[in-house]
Every structure is written in C-alpha cells, then in structure tokens.
Amino acid sequence: MLRGACDSFEFHGVFTELHNFCAVDLSAFYFDIRKDTFYCDRADSAERRAARTVLDELFNCLTAWLAPFLCFTAEEAWQQRLDTPDPTNSVHRRQFPDIPSTWHDEALEEKWRTIRQVRRAVTGALELERAEKRIGASLQAHVTVHVTPEQAAALDGLDLPATFITSSGEITTAPAPDGAYTLTEAPGVAVVPVLADGEKCERCWKVLPDVGSDADHPTVCARCADAVRHSPLAAE
Image 1 (tube, rainbow, N blue to C red):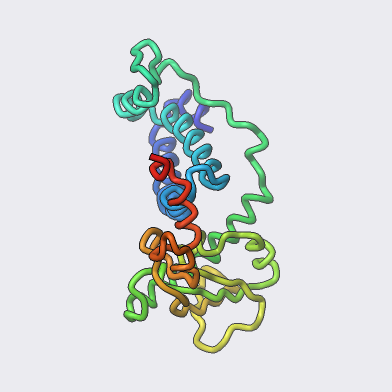
Image 2 (cartoon, one colour):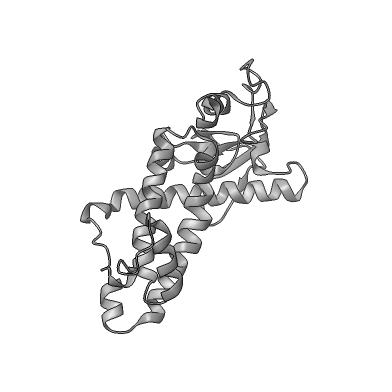
C-alpha cells in the first residue's frame, strides 16, 4: 500500500495512515500497555526483550516510511542509531522494508480486535471510578470483567493487569451483577472495578499483596525486588 501510494504521489493518505498508526495503535495502545514491562521488568526478561525487538522493527520501518515526509527528522533519527554517524549511510538511500507475509494473521487480528473492545469497556469503567473519586489512578484498581465465552477465549492467557493497566484483574463468564459498567461499543462486556488488595509498590506503583515479602527490599513487590536484585547497577 505504501509503495503504491508513494509511486502515485498520494502522500496525504499515506501520512494520515502513518499518523494514525503512531497515535492510535502505538501510543494509545501498544506503548500504553508495554511501558510497565520496559520500566519495571528485569532487563533480561523474555517479555522485555521481545518488546525491545518490536521497537527495533518499528524503528527500522518507521524511519523508512516517514523519510519522504519528515526528511530531516527521519535522517537525524536514523543517524542516531549508528555507532558512528555516516552521511553515506542515509535513510534516504534505503528501500521500504519488506514485511513478511506471515505477519498478516487474520485470526490474530480478530483476537486483538476483541481484546481492544473489552479494554475500551474497562477503561470506561476506570474513568468513571476516577471521576467519582473512588480511585485516584487505574493502578489502584482490581477489575472483574464479565464477558461472553467467545470473548473469554480471546482473553485466555492474557496478562490482564498489563492490558488493563490495573494492579490485578479477572475474567468470568458468570452473569454480571446489577450496576456493572457496560459500554454500547463493547457488547457482552460488563466491568466491576474495586480497590485492589495490598500495599503500593514504590517502584511499579501497583497495589499488590506481596509488597514487603522480600526482606532486602521491603517497600517493593516480589517482581520489582527480583528486578532490583538482578539489575546491572546492583553488581557495581
């Protein structure tokens, strides 16, 4: 699509698609979910390393895709990734990356469309809780999300707290109680948010029952204590 649009000089449509991808898919969704992994996981954790691989692929693609429109910015970003800036290795001498056909997975796309639909309902419920002053931030919450069996299958195995940006969460196909939050755009979903149990971790800010379980790091949760213990700075 990008190559064809650029060949026919339809730059406005291309830039709009790229802007929406960066603002909606990346900033408002992927980065929002993954920032906890980047900031708080162990440096050598599989999840963090996988997310860094995604960032590397994004950088390689976006610098090439944006080069025709943000000429100087794309070049500056590209040169910063090189060990030594090299004017002969310009972003404008690159071709658009070839995207593997295996990345187009319709079943996976449908799964994440369902997840994002459920997440919109959870986000709406948390915004209402903040407006009513029952919570100050989403990380103070535990959410019980009532869904259909089909939605539950899409959510199976998902890291719910990371996806919903809460301290904890659970999925159930049981009937939702009266007063549960619903959203027209997310049929079949009902959300019941409550305050999470535990104490606030001073590192990741999640409210968890295992805060203080590590005697060496009594003010953080078990995950953060493990990350601090294995931090490169701890070895210095």
